[in-house]
Length: 145
Image (cartoon, rainbow, N blue to C red; front, side, top):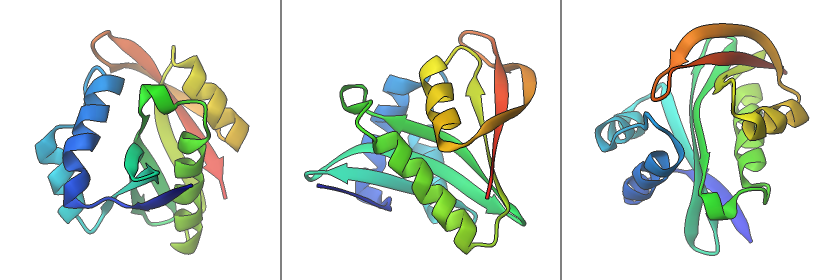
């Protein structure tokens, strides 16, 4: 059995480790602590049998939300954890009066794009050279609530 919950200080090291294993330009421990203290940014984690296996960093602005990081431990992928984290953000966005949820994803990240499309996101734009290490374009995706 697993649950989605708000991240706590005890989760920071695991979040940073997962960021490092999933992304070429990961969030740092300092930035994660800053997000935890923020009134604008939020971090949710998914805990499975006592172990945190994924996280999602996001924020709200008037009328919309944006997911800035979604990561699931490699050995726990394709089990629905990422999907449930995204659905949790969508539900919170609805509760906060948002009309849309946005995110950016590497153009080559076919697995993530397929996940987002299956949830109901669609591409609304592209940003040239958005990512580094390696340099790559990013797709802007939108979910309409």
